[in-house]
Length: 310
Image (cartoon, rainbow, N blue to C red; front, side, top):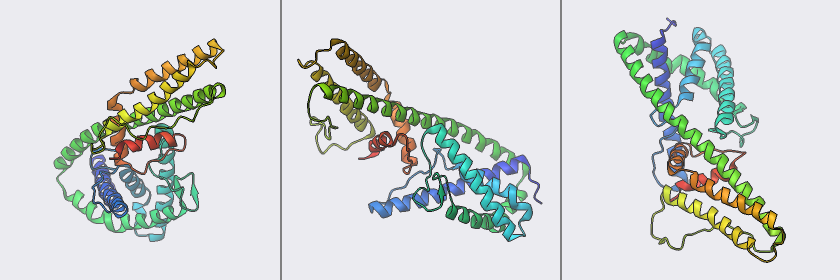
């Protein structure tokens, strides 16, 4: 009864990915609507399509660990909670190291470990495991075991093809986001260092970001690309002001001045080397995951999130 074929396991995986996507979209959209008083559908998850892999993998992991003990509720609860918690810890740690952001974070909850796992969430995983194994999976299993084998194989192949393509595209988006975060953080750190060096020679007011572009009318609706240009404008204005102060007579050290000028020119090239499509792909990843956080690139992530504001 519990010996499934590879095709059946694949279809179970895609089904629970889809169920997880429905839940996440409903929860996040409802939460956003409650805060903003504006109804907006959010296509939640790492992927573009209606799949959230972590739910599929978690469900399959729990089933593998507990389904042969489905009649023992306590065993299902304990094994399910431990298995899901371990899976969440490994997945969360790996994704943060790879993409430099957290796709979920329990840091604001008590008894958490690095924000990846939390005691209360682990207790929930136990209840979910019992619900999954004793209730949800029973009709799903029954329906799939009755389905024609050929139809299952065709469905599994088609879903795997779509899933693989979506994963490839979304992975590239996540890597674009990582690259932008690292690039923005490096540029901002370099700018701050250059400003401090210049400030040590010439006293002038701290350089701040430009809030508005005067040449853009107030009634123009901001888009992602408009905000990208605004972000570039902010950085280039800071660099231009630095260059202006390097021309002041207070500068006696020509070698140091030339060194700073060289670094300024390098930063200018980096700013304009970041392609618009990178920003757009990163923005799509952020739109689907509005709760993303990054301890290392916090300031840069906030700048990128501002690209989505209208």
